[in-house]
Image (cartoon, rainbow over all chains, first blue to last red; front, side):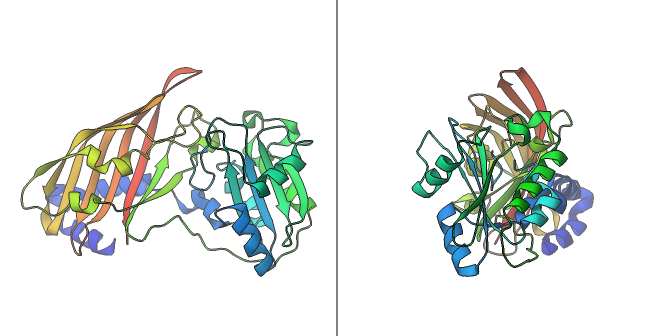
Length: 78
Length: 257
């Protein structure tokens, strides 16, 4: 990213990559909107329980059922 | 759920000592045995299709509760802050023991590919719709497609379908799977400083959702694969029980190594 920004500073007047990067920065969520990734996620209940035993930590588990289809809480299509 | 309590600072704080996991039913498949056992034990108290469980480090069930307060299944009737307070209270009831810790922000990541953030920044929607989707896609030929060239050239947007088909919004009950079709023509044009600009109109479509907009990216060539920093902007069209609705959708796409 640093390389890219440095190159863009040189190129901005004619190619306007600066405006693309500006839009990219505006589109990328702020850290506060990504708080869900401050949770310590395990890919499934089985591995969460295995880790819990080893690390002496509790588990919080959410199940979404009775849907024709459902997305994933972790990536966001839910 | 994701855009509500699981993104609330108080709930995230209450879960700092926990290992967190989830399961969502897909294609009417039966849950794995360990999940099924928990669901059986929660049926008497769950008022929606979302059930939450607090388990001890030994796997013992300490508390289970409906994903929405008041025995409802409708998050639209309760503010996200109220739902968050309910979660904190139910988590505390379990009296789960574990070491306090401060977890770093760990985004989904991929060793060689792109990370995609999708947002639906529309004030008409519940807060939960505005929580970003974060997905990763490992390279399977996209870098080759975007290889450096001396002159301008056209690239079929379908060559980047593995990225673009994932740019559908969170929380849309009508579209829970990636777009089926990716159409459009992108132009890759060399720019100053060894960079290139990739830009063009794209149309993405699924059974009950579609998108029209533009994809623009800056590409830098300093290693074997280009460094990509791009943005997809346009209009998402939802067709469902509320008829046809249009929303602004944005996605940020960044390469990862």
